[in-house]
Structures are given as structure tokens and as C-alpha cells.
Amino acid sequence: MSDKKLPHQHGESKEMELIQEQINCISNFQTVADILKQLGDTTRIRIFWLLCHCEECVINISSIMDMSSPAVAHHLRLLRNSGLIICRREGKEVYYCASDTEQSRLLHQIIEQVMEIACPEQKGDYHE
Image (cartoon, rainbow, N blue to C red):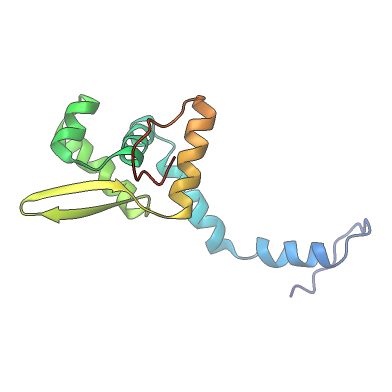
């Protein structure tokens, strides 16, 4: 708990103490900033949104995005490092999809609400 007293007291009590404790957890805020930084790029938002609806390989993502495979791989690496997407290997092929996390689902919903679009209906899609 913080012993810090605010210069102006406005009747806050326990709630302000809890807020001060949370605001001092800089690593939590850094995690949010890192994830949002990944979505600060239009290409990564598009790739992430695509992978919320299907599992795809780099070659197919490259074709869909009309980009080179190395460029797509770069964006996939950043999204994967942030925990927003996962991958699995099948032989020589690597397939990517959105991770099944609360953060990924929330970001997916935010993208669709801001864009005012709805998910294509897919059986078993956890983002419905």
C-alpha cells in the first residue's frame, strides 16, 4: 500500500488507495502498451482479424494480403511475440491463428465494433 498522500483531498478513501496500488504496477501497463503497439499498424490489424476467423499458412496470408511472404512473416512474428496469435507446425508448413485468450477475444471485438462489421459465421469459431 502506498503511504503517499495526495496534495488535495477530495473525499477519496479506500478506492484511491487501490487505484494508487494498481497504477504503480508498471509492468501491467507495459503489457497493455505492447499489445496495443502491435495493433498500431494497419497490416497487423488486418492479419490479426483474418486469423481470428481462420487458421492460415504464410503463403495463403501473403496471397490474401497481396504482400511478400517475408513481409507477412515479419508481422506474424511480432503478433506471435505479443501473444495475440499462435502457430502450429504440420510437416514443413506452419499454420497461424488467433490465440484463444481473453485479450485476443477482446481485441477482436474492439476491431469489429470500431469497424462496425460482424464476423462471418463459422462453426466452432470462438469469436462469434
